[in-house]
Length: 291
Image 1 (spheres, rainbow, N blue to C red):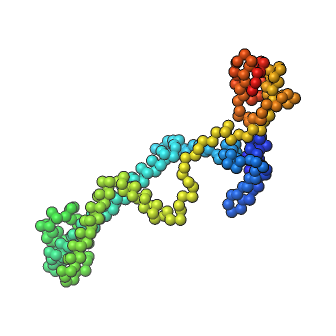
Image 2 (cartoon, one colour; image 1 turned 120 degrees about the vertical axis):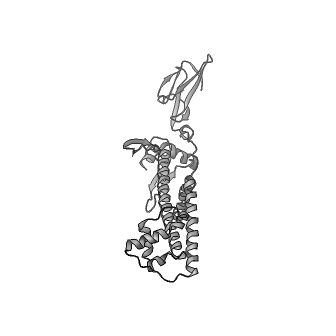
Image 3 (cartoon, rainbow, N blue to C red; image 1 turned 30 degrees about the vertical axis):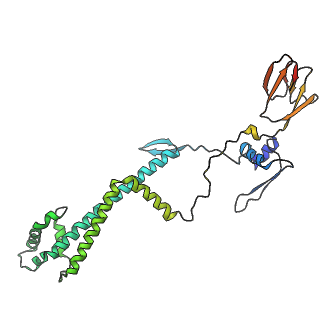
């Protein structure tokens, strides 16, 4: 409001009054003087007041223990790259977990399908001998696995309750293995196409959390408002043709026109000389012929 009143006092805009009706939302009412164009006044408000303020943020961040001054583009790139790296780590963790689950499920299937669990029913001298016997029974099937069988794997199998195994149980394990293999294939594909996966991640964020948070501003190219084209003619220009003076301070002499602070004055002498000068209180133009 202060900048609007100041522009009016300086004659850059012509308003009757300005009133603040701000409550829950900002609302400033500008009442124009009679005969003033609203369209030109709107442009003038952007040109001469704080209705539009250009902001050039100077953003400083710490990168690799050093301060850097970066623009929005660079910040977005760094943020996207960091997100991409985090997603890569998440996928690698997920892949490791899936492969581990596939390994144990495959062990469990072989353990029951090949009746290796019967080693528990045999009379071995010690518990270690039982574990060794189970490990040895797995030998023909180790090539089917993707990593070595550890002592912990075998102990975990022996902790499962041993009961009569039906074909339905084996089929269920087979289905689990197929599902795990499909998931592993997908994760490997995502790792191989990490950029596309990251883009999809951001798009999903928009779908998941974007409802009710739509953009309220409009993206458009602003037209450059030339101050000269919207300036109001708020100054009177006078001329003393006899003595060759022109200016805004010659109020006792002949009124030539009403001009704005941004106007240039062009004059022609009797000798055919043209001269362009800035608006001034008093300026000597020898023998002005006409304006």
